[in-house]
Length: 63
Image (cartoon, rainbow, N blue to C red; front, side, top):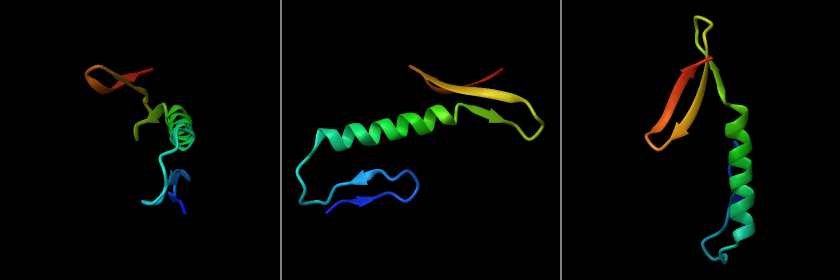
């Protein structure tokens, strides 16, 4: 029987479960939604930054 993560309720199949692409896709959709909702960062001094990812990795840009 699967367990679920505490923060994002991602399904963690049991060792004896067969791989299910639908479970993986649902988990990816949850992660994608959470990341999109955390796109902006406000610094302690009030500047607003947007983060993104490119071929070099993660980056921040002021908006």
